[in-house]
Amino acid sequence: MGTHTQDVTVVGWVGSDLRTYHLDGIGGVPYTQFRLASTRRVLDRSTGAFRDGPTLWFTVKAWRATAVNLADSLAKGDPVVVVGRLGQSEWVAQDGSPRSELVLEALSVGHDLSFGRTQFRRALSGPRRAREDQPEAPTRDAAFTDDPWASAQDLPPGEEPPVDESDVVEEELAELAVAGPTTAGRG
Image (cartoon, rainbow, N blue to C red; front, top):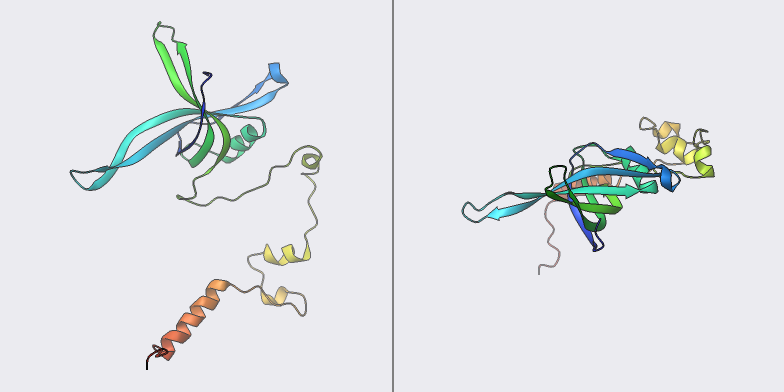
């Protein structure tokens, strides 16, 4: 990659399968790479509608823990947001023609939540990873909140179930609808 880099944020879609390698020359340091497609939406002034603009393709590379987490978290077709250092790699192809590609060395990567939901799992490392296979004893709170089928009858004596705020708002709106409009502030 060239010596000139720029920190950027790119929003796009994972356009290839992720490939993970281990560099033996650097103590087995893992790195993962994938292709990222980023297409801007542009306004077509003649029709007044938005359409796809040109697609920019990047090769995203991540190192160490980020590389391992990417390989476990992303798949081809996922919408992502990548923050990293943008550079350009240049080489001469076998046929003698010059080639180049945009390379984004990822500092941070996440799913683009504009298109869906994701669930975060904290990555463990070092001594904590060795204990990963041993199940943790559930806490009293976790025993009730993790079970979607738990009911108030399953709670210990004297405890009340958590309140779903959306239910409270719906009940208040229903009461207001029955009571009719208020005349407060009118004289």
